[in-house]
Image 1 (cartoon, rainbow, N blue to C red):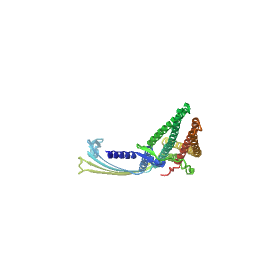
Image 2 (image 1 turned 180 degrees about the vertical axis):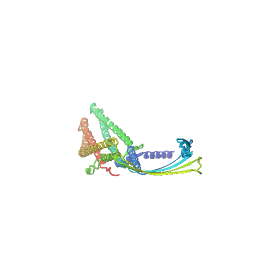
Image 3 (image 1 turned 90 degrees about the horizontal axis):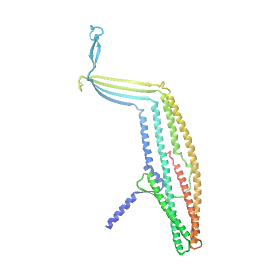
Image 4 (image 1 turned 60 degrees about the horizontal axis):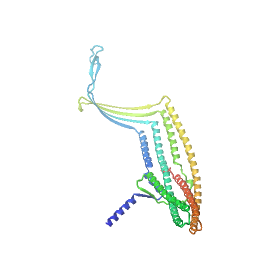
Length: 438
């Protein structure tokens, strides 16, 4: 029985391990998102549709060949009035004879080939579809860029929350000891009830902070699961590193929004040419071959009349006047091109300013983090000395709590500067990803 229980326990443990995904770095998170995030997957599927549309536009330049077959049953052959003199020269002038021509059953086959050898509309439509397919690829990269930013915000928030939880747990442990010590002194009448209540309040506050931090971490993991499209639990094993502050700002790449807007301008230019092509002539060839069988009896081809026919034609279409509608379309597309160009200028200026601000934010966050980290280290050393003085009875509980609040303030400033540093760091990291590469 014990052996059975052990086997069941091992199997359940293995099941639990399999249902948890451990990610050790932000690069692993991005790689997982590339394969599972629903927004990226939809964008990639849309890109497949754009590729199909490009091939479809190209297929319109090829000749078209069609075959057909038919059958007619002339239930009633319509009589035709024929001048009587054709059959009888002695017939009176103006007299007619009713005659019936044709056979009741007619079988038809046809082969038709058509090729528009010169059609500027279709040529520019193909160019437009190629550019739209390329824009779709850039849009997929832009989707990745946006998802990466969401993931990075969550990823570093989790790391920061885990650091905050560790600090809160240490603080709760410290105030727990302080509370035990104060409780004994309060029972002996050494300290007042107000002092005892003060340390109790601080301990409750620290315990509340621990629970809040645990809840925040759980919420952040739930959000991360949602973006990664995960049903399994996810765990981040990275403990974070606030020492790596070296970043090369010169390796910035072109922002994907700028790449997309440039491609939109190319599309707009092609649309202008496509509308101008409405003024151009078109040239096409057509060839058709027909073969007919006429019979007196259904499916009896013994006495059938064979009636072949074929022709070849050339069609030239030259637009002469269309009520100035083409001119209006061209002007409209030219105005849309100007709008796209203005948008590009604005996006370029905005993104350049964002990059400059990001550099300043990062530089300031590094300075603040280094200073606050040093202050926290000194404050922790001071707090050890203050605790020793308190335990030795040199200082009062009230002064101990006042000095302890200095440590809490230093911890808060450190976590805030670490959050600012992490925010700037991941934004720079993502900006350095080369989205121009396939």
